[in-house]
Image 1 (spheres, rainbow, N blue to C red):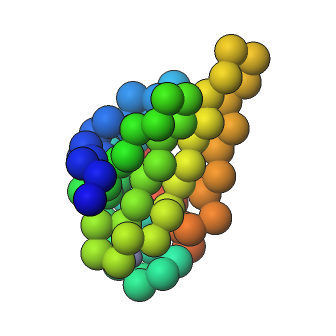
Image 2: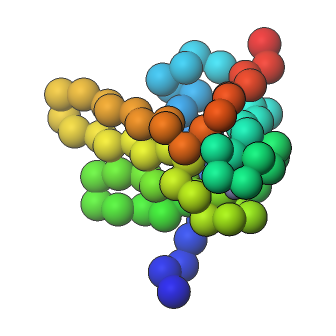
Length: 85
Ligand SMILES: [Zn+2]
């Protein structure tokens, strides 16, 4: 099994994109309905991407792909993402 980091690993890059403190953000998993802080998610690092998976059911919640020219975000695995002000 691949080793993973906790959700804090993705909070930095996402905070840059959303302009908010994402360590306090929470999401609802589209796979199992679990609502948890982003910090509890499992983050897998790829050479140019972050894969964020649900810590309960392993559904892919968010994928962030970084290139020199852009940052692409897929959040299809999340029913909702709540970002505190
Ligand atoms: Zn889940």
